[in-house]
Length: 267
Image (cartoon, rainbow, N blue to C red):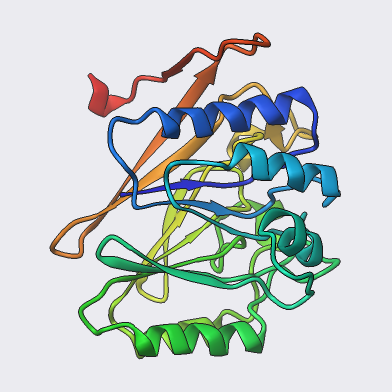
C-alpha cells in the first residue's frame, strides 16, 4: 500500500507547516506499515533553503519516502538540502522496489517554467527502468505534472506537454500499471496511454473546478478545505484501487488532534 501526497508548498509559515505536519502525522500513526510514501512535487513554495530544511524535518517517517520536484522547486536546492545529495541541475529521477511493485518517480519540471516536460534524459532513464523490471512486476510511474487534460483551463495550460513520447514508451511495457501525479490541487482520476492516471489532491489548497467558480470567478482555490492525500493499493492480481482521505488538524501549537472526514466507505 502506498500513500500519495502532493503540493505541500512549504513557505515556513504556520498554515502550510501544520497542514503538512497533520498529513504526515496521520500516516505515521497508522497501525500498518506502508510500502512507500510518494510526494509528487511542489515541496517548497519559493525554493528557499529554509523551506527544504523544513521539508526534510516534516517528511521524516518510519515509512520509506520518495519525493520528486514540481514547478515551484529548484533542482539544485532540492538535491542538496532535501535529499542530501551533491548539488546538480540534472533531472531528479528515482526508483525503488516497494512491496511487489517498482516505483519510478520522474522529474517533469522545467527550470523557470510552470508547465512540465519529461526531458530526453528522463525518458531514457525510465526506458531503462522499464526494461530492467521483470515482465510480471507492476511498475508505477509518477511525476508532478499531469500528462492529460483534466478539464480545468488553468491547470490544463500548465500540464505536461510532448506526452506522445511517454505514451509510445508505455506501449512496449504492459506491466506499466498506472501513472501518478499532483500539480492540480484536486483529487482526480482519468486515463493516459490506456492506463489509470491518478491525481493526488493538494495539501496546501484545493482547486475550484470551473463549474464551482460562478460566485468566485477570481478564486482558483479553496483555502478552507482540509488537506488530503491518496492511498493506492495494488493487489495480487495487479488491480489498483485508490482511496482518498481528508485530514483535519487542530492547529493549536502543541498537541495535534487528528481525525478524518467520513466517506461512503466509512458508513
